[in-house]
Amino acid sequence: MTRYALLLRGVNVGTKNSLPMAELRAMLAQLGCVDVKTYVQSGNAVFATKLGVAALTKGIEDALEQYMGRPIATTLRTLKQLQAIVDGNPFADVATNPSFLCVTFLSDAPTKAELAPLHAQDWGPELFQVAGKEIYSWYPNGQGKSALAGALGKLALRGTVTTRNWNTVLKLLALLG
Image (cartoon, rainbow, N blue to C red; front, side, top):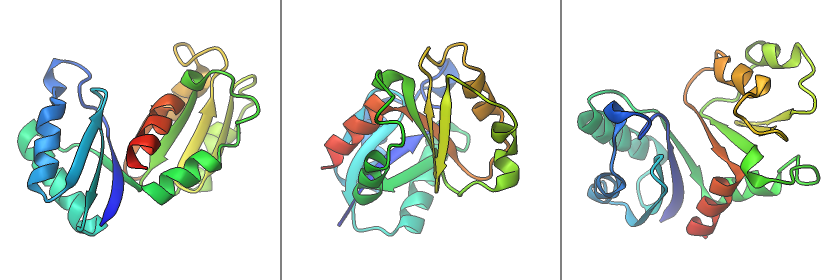
């Protein structure tokens, strides 16, 4: 069995996007996932399964679309992948508040052209670094009025994109381990 963290985008943000975590746990169990746990209401789950990534992703996305009435973007990371993300934190020495450190999880590694808007200016004191299919971002003054956060949100990236703060990343890793 492989253990996964599931990250959903765009659930429980407004009344039309409601997905009770009990329903998500039930959907995952129905697909054959075991030891299913959810974390906060924004669509985070951890579980183990014998399903391969393609079958798992299709099953989850089909179940979510049927329940929600629209497609829901999903991102999966294994325990090993999530551990590598935590171990590879480029801002460990400067990120003093884990709520202001984020990881944007991508289904496809971004191209130079897709990232060009980020490299077009200096975001200081905010920082970002791309590492494979993740973008780490540090917002020393918070994300609320962050120009970098706004620019990240406007990037024309292929595939699935969802962001979690460092506290959530660490909690998901702990739940997986």
